Structure formats: C-alpha cells, structure tokens
Image 1 (cartoon, rainbow, N blue to C red):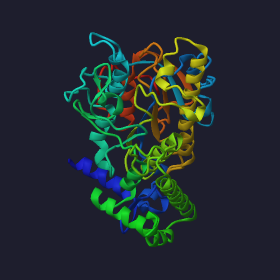
Image 2: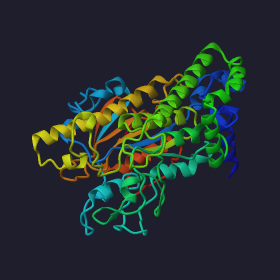
Image 3: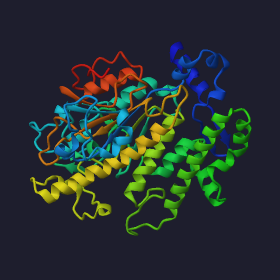
Length: 457
C-alpha cells in the first residue's frame, strides 16, 4: 500500500468512530462533535469531504412493461413520473431516469437461447458470458468489484453483496447456462462470482458483531441465550460518548441507536416465526414475508453506508428469470410466466402491478436515505449513487435495448438529478464509467463494452 493509500485510510478511519463491547463493534455515523478541531476550523469544505460517495446496484428480474415504465414528456426536468415510477415522487429531485442504455452482451448469438442468464451475468460486467452449465463458468469482473479493489481498503468491508433470493453457483438454470450467472451480480474475477448473503441476521452480525466469523456466531448465541440485545454491550461506551456530543449529535446518535435496535427486533421476530414449509430448511433470520425480507436487506445496506462500513454494494431483489408468485398481490401465476404475456391484457396488467410493487420497495429505501443528513448538510442519498434496473428491457420479447434504468442520488453533487434523460443509444457500461469517476477512480478508461462516458453533468 503506497503512502497516499495509507493517508486515505487513516483519514477514513479518523472520521469513523466505534462503540465497543463484548461481542460488539459498532461503527457510528459521522458526528461533527468528534471531528478534529482542524477540520472544524476549516469550515464546510472539510465537512463535505467527510461524507464519502457510495455506490449500489439493485437488480430486478424479467424487465418491465416499457409503456408503463417510461415517464411522460420530452425529457429534462419537466417529466411526468409514469404509473410504475409514481411511488418515487418524494425523491424525484434525486432521480435520473435514463433512457437509451443497452446491454448488447445479453443479446442472442451463436449460443442460442438463454437471455435471462445473459441479462444477469452481463449486467455489471458488459462481458459476454460463456455458455456452460459446468464448473468452467466465465464472465468478467463487475464494476462494483473494480471499484472495491481500488477503494475497499478505506472501509471495514470492501463491498457488500445481498440477495433476497436463493444462493446458487452451480446447476443448469437457463438453456445450458449455469445458475451462477442468474444468482450473482458481483464478480471478483471472470471465474469467481461473489455469493450474496440472503440472511439479514448474518448481515447484521457481520456489520455489528466483533471478532472472526466463528467468534461472532458464538457471541450471537451467548446474547440470544442471555436474551441481550447487541446494544446492551455498548451502552456504557455510548453513555460516555453522549457526554462529548453537542445537542444535535446527541439526537443523531439516539436516532441511529434506535434504528439499529428496531432492525434487531424485526430480525428477532422473524427468527421466532415458525417455518412456513417444514420440509424446506430456512436459516433463522430470513423472513417468510418477501416484502419484509427486502426491507431488512435495504436497511442493512443503509446502515452499512451510514456508518461508512462499506461504500460499494449490490442487491438482487430476485434472480434473473425469477418465477416467484406474488400472493401479496393476489396472483397465483409466476412472474416469469406472466412476462411472456403475448400482449394479453390481463397478464400485462399483472406484470405492471409487480413492476409497481418492486418500485414501492425501492421508494421506501430511498426516502430513508434522503432523510439522513450527513456532515456537510447533504443527505445520505445526495452523497450516493443507487442504480436500479434490469438487464432485460421487455420481458415478453427478451430485448436488451432501452433498459429500464434509474440512477438515484447525485454522487455528492457530481450529477444533475431530478430529470428524465433521453440519452443516445449507448452501452450501460458507459454509465458505470461516470460512476467510477465519482468514486475517485478517474483512470478507468474502459469497462466491458463501454464506448465512453455519458453526459450527466
């Protein structure tokens, strides 16, 4: 590690404070009262620097109904949110709806069928995947991992990989393509996907439990046996810290600790619930309710960003080609089956409702991010870049042009937001080059099939 990297890491760690107790290691959000005097004396510029930029990629399967997705109007700031995107009204000032992006690597070729595997396997890489259901999988390095390799040393965890679906690295899932392509967004190398974590409890323990994985498991068992919250072990440290804070920071710390305890209680409630299907093993901590599962995983990502535990994350709402049913919407048909609607009105309407349901979950997450004010006066969402979308455009026809892509947040002020951008036809990976710039990695000239950067300034 060179001297500049060491200085960056030292600066990052000096901004981040911890509460420690038996089996607990709590990273705290940025608190002005704990900033060095030299930083406070230098004014708002130092405050802005104390709020790092984060990036996340949230994937939805099977594309969308294009006619219900795209906003009305000619683009720019005067756009009208479509019915599908209407739940995002409260954070529209932080949105860019970007049209014209494509994933050519997912299109059919000599390898024939398999659009779902190609859509998922190329979404963050822009590299065509090898058609195989064996162990000789081959894709590309994903943009999240390229960024994590360069800045991951600044945080406790280089990146965070989450899923609300199964975890699969093998088997034939789509016309001769390995399941690894559909169930993994993050790729450390062309042959090594990073398995996402589906269990909120294990993510929680990773973020807040101290020690090795084995030690964290033992500490969790001890706390559960003694019926203690993880907060119980850091309360003395927290009380001491409170006396050092100004009024605004005390309120901020109270709100943060309350949110952590509320999430812990939701996980504990899930663990007490009986397994819906006794024949199916489900690790404790994974809710039977899909909406609650997604909400908990979004909360894990929010806490990880808020405490600067990581600056890079991916989340699969569901693996590409997902055929889960939405009983909560009153549907018995699977999502994937419905997307092959052949323009039947009743089936199209059901897909629209599923698209809307997913956006509602995103909206709740983004509103929480926008409500968290960071050092420097801007929101957590302002200081982030959250990409939401799919490698499929029209699920009925398996198209991969004009992908449904949202970018929420302005990357710390580097992007214009609150607009509908009708970009010229361009690779999705072009957007990733813009995002890498905002993460401080401006030397990246190409990623996958990229041809340049988008005009987002």
